[in-house]
Length: 260
Image 1 (tube, rainbow, N blue to C red):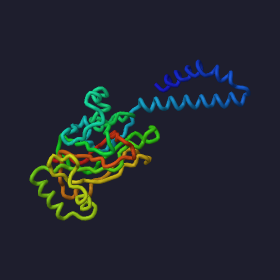
Image 2 (spheres, rainbow, N blue to C red):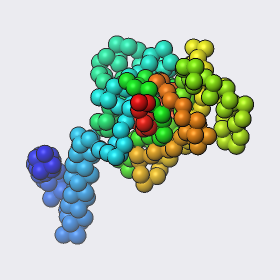
Image 3 (cartoon, rainbow, N blue to C red):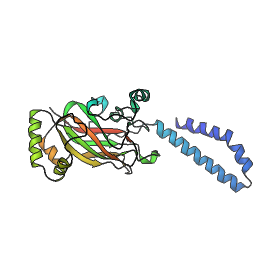
């Protein structure tokens, strides 16, 4: 694949640019400089094509991702923000440009869920009830794209509380919370779309688009983990991005332990 791409670019340059270079070269130094420029353009174009076509494997293989579509993760539309495009445009873009894109592990440029604003939320329902331990967010590496300001930056993961045992733990935790959890409970009652359901903040974190590692995993707050609460639905709320007018969410993963 890479050889054919580069070969086709070489043929294009040879047919369209070499005569112009020879005609414009008054000295051998000028010809060498221009030839180097053309060679640099060939490499840059081939790299862009190869990066666009080659999926980037990002999912940590040692952890089971309950949000992944092929593992049973599903988008819960009633708790999910409206997309940037109308439904017919989303259908035209296919799965790669839909709200389901963050639940796929085929990370390619443009294959993200587009929000029309700097904030929004996506709700994920699991096939199993899960004791959540970590959340993962992924994005195309900053070095491979021209626009980085549409990447999510400040995020908050919520767990929807259901079941008598979980509700009892939820009320107890709200009354006894300290530190970071208490601050989150004070600042945020529930995600923007909650449909009247009780939610518990699991962790607040920042995604760093400029970090060396574009796959970033964050642990759930210790007080929440210590309760043993489990969840069938989580909501990832995007509170801000890196300055863009819209937001592009490429990948979200949820790790933990299935309730037995």
